[in-house]
Image (tube, rainbow, N blue to C red):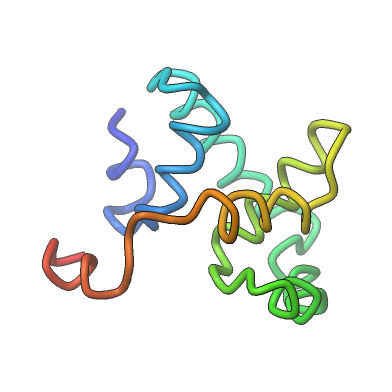
Length: 109
């Protein structure tokens, strides 16, 4: 199954970028599996609602992409080492995200 179909053609391109490049080192099959697990996790145990309570912590660190922030919470729960905010800061502020709002419009997303 294609990633875009799995997400009803509405995946955040930056989320795909982070999963593919930084988490799965370019392995598309691992990225598909990881994003599938993330999608399931997001709706379990009200994880999306729990993030809403913590989102100001991320915003204070200039981590403004809510999809990436939620993904970083997911990653922090799966793997020890960095906190969710450290993951988000690394991906958003330090590494930078390549897609901005105008890209979404030009790609008709």
